Image (cartoon, rainbow, N blue to C red; front, side, top):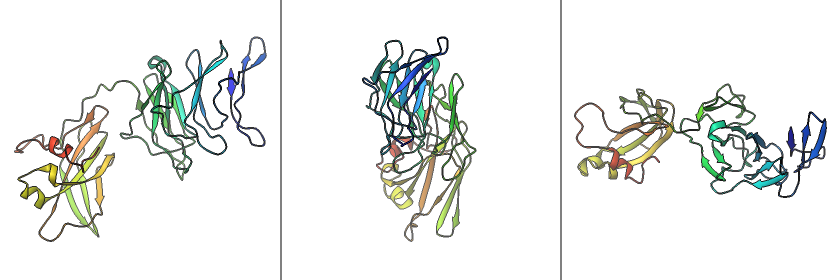
Length: 292
């Protein structure tokens, strides 16, 4: 067993630890040479040969640093800070077995903002890859996490109130294709707003919704690049959006389009059945107002 870090009674953050041998019933101190800065509220995972600690709070600020500890050599190696997730504490981490990566997710930053972001750390390459935010659960701290052998499941926690929600994150390559279907959109006038609703797109985990001007579309002979005015919602899981922006001027109107998203990538703004001429996707994606 290896213990490391934490805070004492003062409280002061620690960067010391020890290895416990249950057979010999003996403790050996972990070296402080090259050890990460002192911290608490960090995470630790076991790779099968080494311990990786990351993140946490040093008593003043959240951290985005960590270290890989080799108990055989009693040495530390720092984790890369290139492409690293934002500094945080009270997050979770899981070792992904055959994928040989550490996945971290959630927690809170120095502004006490609850985070729904994370990263995948490959210790062999010393590289970070951001976890997708597509359909990610809302940000949280004090949550739990398990690794199923193919997915990471965070659940519960706190974000202003206790949560009974979670999500399944696939760390490996996504075998899914982008959502291929289209949707039926309806609009209803609300006090000071327009409620845009749509039917679900098969295999979509989330949606991008864009809005444009009808007069611009007409005057440009149907050019969606110039007539796209705003990305209203990016990676939204719900099937409705309340548009509270200012209404178009008299004699004009707005159009709304959406595409489904999955871990396989974005779907299409096009109709998959009907009499549409040409493709909207390339033109909307070329607009400076498109959804990322």
